[in-house]
Length: 421
Image (cartoon, rainbow, N blue to C red; front, side, top):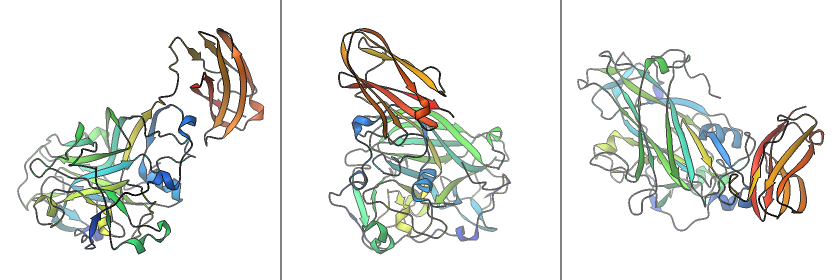
């Protein structure tokens, strides 16, 4: 899935990262009520959605697939202070990224696309569970062998303090002509006392270990989660070193502990990202100028990548494992109905589906492909209590994954099956 970023654990950053890019000076204003991405490109009707089970979502990969674009990957040092110097393409400079935050909008058509092995799935009227969080970066172990930690935090919208206000930039409409709109973003704030975003509902600390370094030199930090979120949420990433540093003497990239976050320009190097009107998915960062109160207008806020114009960190390389259960579905072990796994599965030829009813009920049987297209629909009529069978001739279907359902008195139970040829 990932590009090969580098071959050595010690990273050499490009000269273009020697200094922090200037923040776009165009005015940003609070946005009025605005249509969402779902209005622009609505996924399938909620009634046709299905239970998903721990599907991995990486916004860089999703964006690349949705727009048929090639992302350009880069690295940015992340450190809680600015005293140690970092190696920027052979030139030393103070670290300016102190925290990253990735905002996710589950109404985004990019998050709700087909073609990656699952149907359009998110029903924002019910909670979604984050089952795990992971990210890619480069980590050089400190020479004192101290324990360095990466901290993931999940942030929910909190009225009056976080992710509850949408802003837009007044001077960037011409940069996104295909969207016919100005860019919008949900303001992600940070507390100026403890530098933790208000509205944090979960925190996960991951100790960085040499044995977790991948063959291409990247560190893969992963943690199980288990927190529910709604339509809009954010994941922030902070690095906590296990050792103290001598100001302006110790340098990251030369054997001193530091975390270098993998990010991506979604549409290629030096280009503006794609933008769908109303989509609030965006990456953000707390910079040294924000943390030290030197950036007027941004103090106490994460700066969205949109403020920097073309390029920079348009998406942070985060893997989220998400799951969601359709609230209108019948639970299988209730006294109403049960759907069994088809046999054989995978199927090549005929396969049998069995279901059991506790009471008499009207039953409809349906099969859909991964795009949500209904390929089989039969009304079974009023069935008596007991076990019933349906035989499917898989020779009439293309190879691939399908979702089969019984609809019992208007409620649905769904399972997956695989067809081979």
